[in-house]
Length: 178
Image (tube, rainbow, N blue to C red):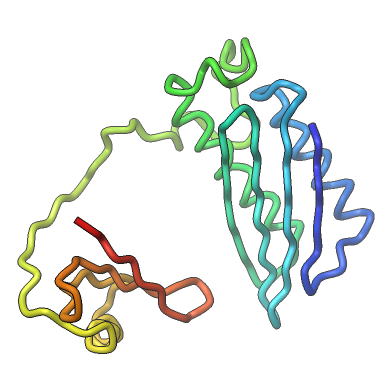
């Protein structure tokens, strides 16, 4: 397992590196030896962010977490996210994961009851897109709503778009090309 820990606007201490490496090593049960793990630690004012990226045999797992306490909390938040992704797709990618990784139904970071089946859609909605909007108008509609995303018909090109509020408070836009 190749573990690369990088700090961007954050000084990663030797103790933090040791803790991260020891916890990430527990994921070894899912992968063969040729796995690359990149962990990026960032600090933006009072917010500590961590990205965990794992690449192995064409598989890619990613988790991004943040909190106001410290990086030690982040590793404990990120690894269960990664393990949930692995377990959720275990049948689909079993051939690419380590043989015997799922012989036991005991997981390193998540409880089995936390894992929902793939077909767990609990609510379904239908709505009309209404009049076409500019991105600025859609952003205004999002700000007036109590949601973190807004779906709209783009007035400039006729495509369906989704404007959303990012974790940093800024906005992103996804355009669906049909």
